[in-house]
Image 1 (cartoon, rainbow, N blue to C red):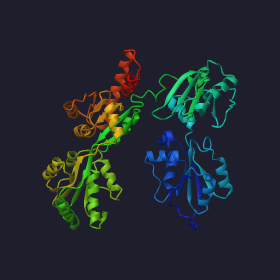
Image 2: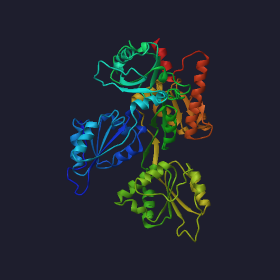
Image 3: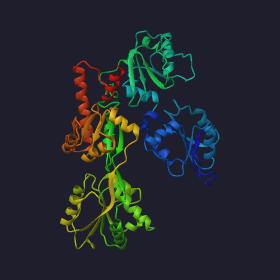
Image 4: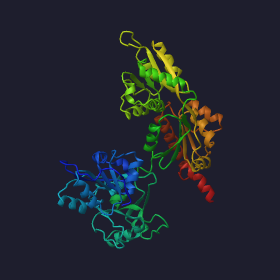
Length: 529
């Protein structure tokens, strides 16, 4: 066992029946996790899994509950399962793929059941089935045999009837291809080989069986799992089904410089087009130079001088609660106040502290928008007319002015300062300057100015997308070419604009008789000449 975190103590829980839940997930496509599996992980007292799957869970921000014991790469998982189940614990055994089809948990589950422990087996998505979906292969169209080749097998015997869908290691591909011929497949039957299935590095090679009998074993990566689809019924895909690798931004590495703004919408939209986004902070948050005003406002907050407090960012939430903690108080200091927020990330920062805002217009993302949605002061319904806005040193006049017009007395106080962030790590700076990012997505003029200040201008090979005309103008001021401008200001629209540009670019390359490659690969090809 390489890792065993603290938690799930050794003490028995009288009157509580333990149970062992077997579940499956795909490390390359952890987002395909079933709902029942997700709920089991979130409620587990003990999680037994592999380092690979655990890292995938962490990368997807899927967390176990506080106090859950995590055991990685256990030599004898069945012994752990029964030990903790006998103490009234809920144990989740997370394996790759479907627990019974690929996970190899039959012996473990049988041992637990015979030992008198309740077991539950949650169906998962088999890696072979998922790979077929990502490759656009229709397994159910004609009879097909699903074959899992043991990594230790040097000789493989394949069924003689039906098309074949095979999971094996890359080094085993020639053996599998020759075995297919021995099983009666024709040398010229269509075949697909999918590598890195379900990732943005996926590559599907089309050919015939004979093409793969002499496939050279790579110097590295020979043990990586790959998927072979042998037979015309499988390998002859219907037009348009090769959907995954033909996404407009497939495999693109996109830099997302950000300020205090949450860029989740942009990142998720880019991922839906096949891109991997890397965020680089361009702004850092520091305390105000003179905290006296904030201290005074917070004393007024505790004394009940305000009717409303408005948070315009998660940083404002953090700043206020840090100050409250300095006074030895907690979230109860806000009891009796009405609370308004701008943005989902701001609302979540409060929710994590057990507070649900009274006013959170879900269609509003700006302070001006919140001012338009804010109720007017009513001297009958509102006992106090004062509003407290803890804010950044960047002014929020549209909000203060809007509330003043509605009859409120506004105290907007600097709770934190925004300063230019420290430069990103050297590898990121080098990637920016040498064109190893396929695209850069700027969400504001500030991100343009600050990125240039901390890391330099993006290389001319990188495609530049911006959220609107003002950001495009700022790019022009810094000598940065703009390729795509969002039709309307918004993160989703920015991702859509980059995808549309990528489609036009690909069409232009094809029309010129050139290969369609990612922007970052052009420099590498030139360097290789």
